Amino acid sequence: MGAMAAMVAALVVGLLGFLLFQAPAQAHDHQIPKTVLKKEAKELQTGHRVIESSWASASGDNACVNISTVYTFELPDGTFNYPEVDRVAAGSELRVRVSKRQRPDSFSVAAYPTIDEHGNPSGQGRLLKRSLQRVVVDGKTVAWDARFSVNRPSRHYYLIAEGHWQDREGCNSDQYAHWSFHSKTRA
Image 1 (cartoon, rainbow, N blue to C red):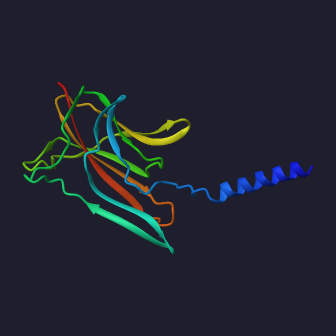
Image 2: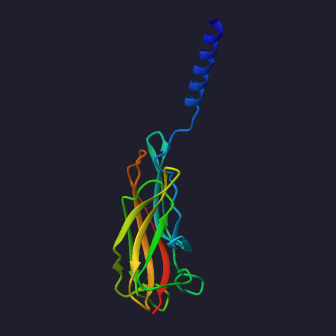
Image 3: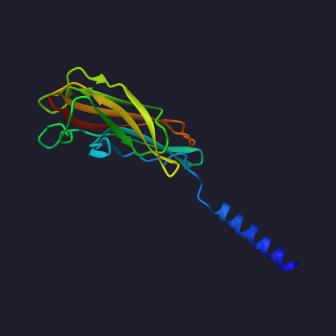
């Protein structure tokens, strides 16, 4: 009986040690998520540039650190920094994969038909109709796909994606980022 009690006591101490020294679970990782433009399983391009972002994290003593950044698109020659174009068939379904477990509170994709002489998005931008779907691996959410279609033939799609996440770990602020992509439909 004494050996059994010692074994149970050792098991309880071990379990308590594991639980006490385990890192706390995070609702999200306080990192701006990486994005990829995909067609089916093929990765077309990485979210080229974060245009603007604002991200918060708790810093202890009921304080928060908020890092806000505005990026310039301009290259040294003064032109906008969109990714190289990827060509797809008109009517293709594309998706922006957002590598973040936490579901975005909002996510939009705007398409511009042209760029100006400096390469900035130009013309009437329009929000594309999109659906948001969870990406699950081994039963766990690993990312979210914003799915949309590019329907007009022979058209450039200068895309700006924008995602928002509410911080849920003490700062309660809106966290957001923007990314750019570029595709063109074939005739």
